[in-house]
Image 1 (cartoon, rainbow, N blue to C red):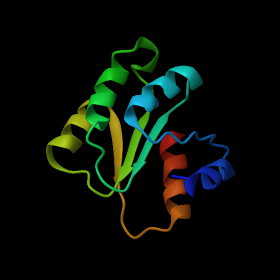
Image 2 (image 1 turned 45 degrees about the vertical axis):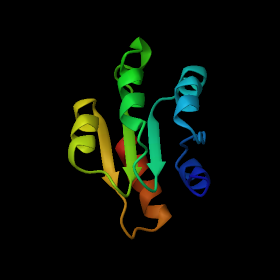
Image 3 (image 1 turned 120 degrees about the vertical axis):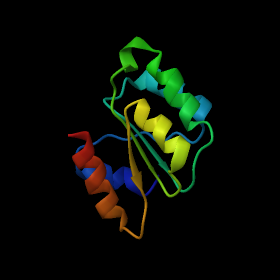
Length: 107
């Protein structure tokens, strides 16, 4: 994620890096972001529970959530989509292209 922060700032997207799921919800409540983006090299087991918990908080019921990772498939992807999470499966894309895609998804 560290390499994407300056790339996102190029698009005037302020990003805060949070490394653990139990810290992500507290960070969202403190920062009041316009969107939440997960960028993970592999599936974060707690991401589905995080999204379920996030959607229970009134101010985050409709916040855009984007999950960018390399292993998003099957039941996990279905559940995320059910909660309104947009997903992007990483391939051999340069970080600049991923940042541009994130910016476009958040517009």
